[in-house]
Image (cartoon, rainbow over all chains, first blue to last red; front, side, top):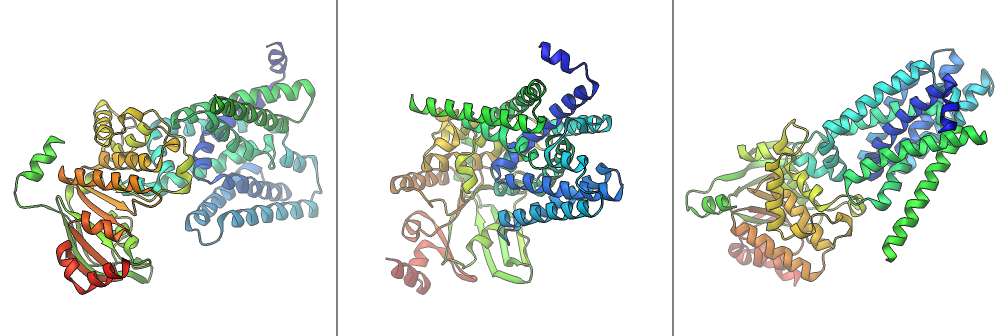
Length: 272
Length: 247
C-alpha cells in the first residue's frame, strides 16, 4: 500500500491509473464477446489502424483523438463486414489491413517529423500520455460499456452464443455487433497511447481467455474478466513503478502470469 | 404443457402456422428457391428433404424470417410473430468451447418474451425449468455446455427453442455429428413433443428415418418436387427414386 500512496502523489500517475483502470475494464468486458465470437483479430487490426490514424494526425498537426476515433470506428465497421460476409478469408484480410495501416503510419511519420518520442510512445505506450481529457473520455466510455453490459446482458449473451437463433427470435443482431465494434474502437484509441499500439489488444484478449480456463458460466467469465483486468492493471502499474519497466509491457506480462496461473489451476482440477 | 395438449387434441380445425403461396427466396438477383407453396399447420411433422444445394437451407432461413421473400406471399401466424420461432440451428465451431451453463443457454430462449426489460423474471425461469424437465436436462442445469455430449447439447438447444415458443420447432440438420443412439433419442423426443402439440419442421439428410418419423414430406430441388403425406411420397415417382437410390 505504501507503494500505491507514493505513486498517487504524482498527479500524472493518478491520471494514468484512473484512465487505465477504466479502459482495462471496458476492454475486458468487450473482449469476452469478441473472443467468444472469434473476433479477437479485430482488436489487433483496430490498434494498428489507430496507430496509422494517430501518426497522420500528428504529422498534420491535428489533435489526435477527434481524427483517430472516427477513422478507427469506420475501420471497425469495415472489419466487421469482412468477418461477417466471409468472402475473403477474414483473418488474412485483417492481417493485411493492420500491416498496411502500420506501414502508412510509419511512412507518414518518417517523411514529416521523423521518429519522435510521440510516435515511439504510440508504438509501445507511455504513462505520460493520459491527459485530463482522456480520463474524462475513458470515464464516459466505461459508463456506456458498463451500462450496455448491465441493461443488455441477456441480449449480449444471446448474440454472442448464437447469432442465428437470436436473429430468429427477433434480436437486432446487427445493431449489437456494430455497437460492440464501435465501443471496441473507442476503447482501443483511448488505451493505445498508454499501452502502445503493439500491446493494446492484449487488454481485450487476455482477461477473457484467462477466465475461460476456470469459469463455466458466461456470467462467471464476464465478472471474472472485469475483476482480473483491474487487478492485473494495478499490479502491472505498481511493478512498472517499482522496477522502472515500461507500463504497457509490465501490464501484459502480469496478464500472461495470470493466464498461466489459471491454466495450471485448470490442469490440476482436471487431474483430480 | 397441459394447455397445448388440450388444444391440439380438441379436434377443432387446425390453425395454419405458416402459409407460403408461390414464394421465391434468394440472394440479390438470384433466386435459390422458386414457387414454393406449402402450409405448416398445428401439430404437423414436416420434413424438408433434397440433395445438397437444392435450397433447403435457404427455404428454412426464409421461413424463419432471416431472408425476405423475393416473390409470392409468406404468412406467419400472429402468435409466432410475437415470440419468434423455436429454432434449432446447426452448431457452430465457436459454440463447442463456449463457457455457459445449461440454464443460461435455455434461458436465452425466453429473450423474445422479455421485450425491452433487462432481466429474466420468475415466470421466465419457470418456463425454462419446465422445458429443461421436459427434455430431461434439469439435473444438469449447472453443468457447462461445452462439457456435454452431442446428444445432451442438442437437448439443451431444443429446450431453448421451446422457451421461445411451444408452437413450432424448426430444426436444421439436427442429427449432424450425433452417434446412432443419440439420434434415436432425438427422434423419440421429437415424436413426444409432436404428440404434445408442437409442430415440427425439420431439414434432414436422414431420409430413411425421416420417412418413418414425419407425417409430411417436402422434396425440394430449387422448386417443390413433392409436398404431401409420407404415404403419398412413398408411392410417388420422386419418392420412389429418392428412397430407392438411397438404400
